[in-house]
Length: 466
Image (cartoon, rainbow, N blue to C red; front, side, top):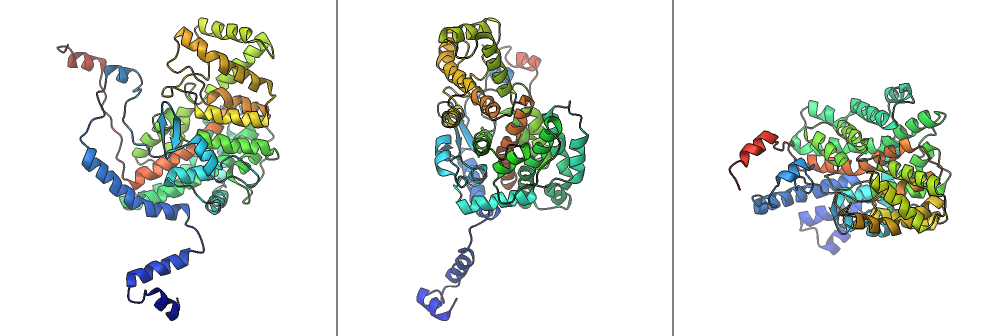
């Protein structure tokens, strides 16, 4: 800074103002990185949590019922999850922003219209909408971190093709623990206040390496095993599509951008999110925590639902044909219910309206594949099933969820390998789990240890109560 400029700004007599100006001058030519911005936000967030606990710490949400304990803890307020909140009427909000708002506000790829997952990750971590420059830099950072160790490649390559892709996925992610920055820092005695830094590095490495892992599994099980290299000039979803063999289809790339964004987080109570948070609370590194998340996601009640929807739709088509009448569809739906089965893709543990993630995918389909027979059937079912479910009394929420649509979109572009769909879900869910793991370590979240009761203990507890 010149003497004349210093005099003009009258900062020569104010060392604090001078330092502020110098700092501004040195950073004005570039925008903050994600880690730099996060470091700025953490102190204020720590104070906010202290204030919340000081003012509200002894207050109760309400009673806990015995039914909640036996009923999978449905509706039991028991977790802090900063990235997203699921409203029964509005659906998911990422840091207060709806999916439609995210689609409008988050940066897109050049020539594209769908939000980039890089922007969503920035939003989940900071609560802020990043600039195009910040998102581009995040894409480059992930591309630079994307290579996986040779021994992890060997682990994947030695898996038999009959081993489920999700099992292979979990194995590979667990093995990444070998190079965990957090595990190393912990062994070296890093201060608790600094846990978040190495956790951030692990989470960045985790997200960056997932496309190479997923692509290698896909090519080994369903293809020729040959992988292209990561292109540092492309965004995350474009590289993921290329690794899966769909990089030349720009519409599929756009689908992945939307898919990863809307599947990234769904508050903390679902199995994969809660599992990652729980395991992370033991100070297991992010690779171990997220591999546990993947094992939960692999369950048929969580991550396999989109496959069940697609199978059900195809069975319906085989039975009643394409372009079936509404009456034929109604009859098939009733036959499904009367056989003791559920209509897959409908209903949700929390939502009481149409899932906005379903709506986002429907809008994509209307734009890119309006004449697809399965898409037409999905729309027809949407107009029919809720009324039947309400009449049958089968669901508190008779409306479609995200799984009612995603499989149809993937298969339209030639990804017919339904066993792999949950791997894509897993790649997406890493964004939400990773962002919460970082904040848990930054805020000093303790080891999770809820209280459990036996059935006998509950009987004794309420024996003499009316």
